[in-house]
Image (cartoon, rainbow, N blue to C red; front, side, top):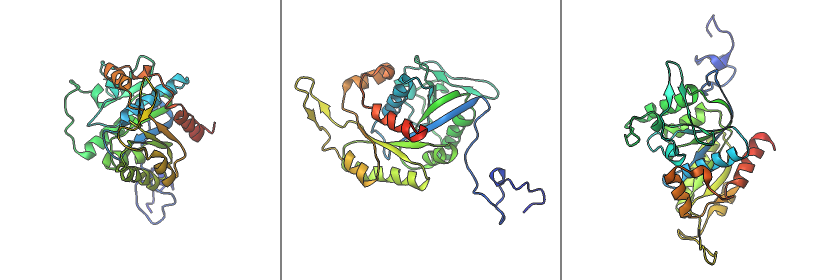
Length: 279
């Protein structure tokens, strides 16, 4: 123990035998930001609609009157600005970065809001990408936010680990698709969350079925749904199914995802409220 020790182990980086509390890796926000609840949207693999689910959850929560933000942590595959129709760039000064607001007032920060051209690739190694995500948390002036949804990159690598360790996560929502193979991928994401002591608040199956507009029969285009089985297997109490709906894809392409019409996320949002607010 150093002679100058103030016995505050949380702010100390020394690895001494007298440490009385575990070292925290959580990053502090700036004085202009106050985010009450942080929800991560994760998937074990790409292409299952994680950004779509993030956008729909944010839009649904905003309709309930909450102050909402989206942190796009998918640095190499950012799609949140496109879904919300954001064309302007984020501004900054010597100290801070300022998020861009959607037309309904959702605050967004994404790497594409800082690039000169949206199509420019981000050719960075893992630690640099992870550092950018931490800066989105520490250096962005978020203001007062009730719910921040973090669109995570797929998998269980550097960036998801950084988000889990650096941000005060209240829980995650896992996104999957109907294929049976995805069960193994879901398991990896759920077990990573368990290892990090982060609760899994729900499981969303995207592209779950197609409903015929004429007869309203539901057809499972990608095979039988297994989402309920996954939920039971991993003890997840809330499940949502999003159909194959061309209108949703069109809304994302047009930057109007906030205008989607459907109740697929209502129960999931209620579960999140109950879990983190006790409502």
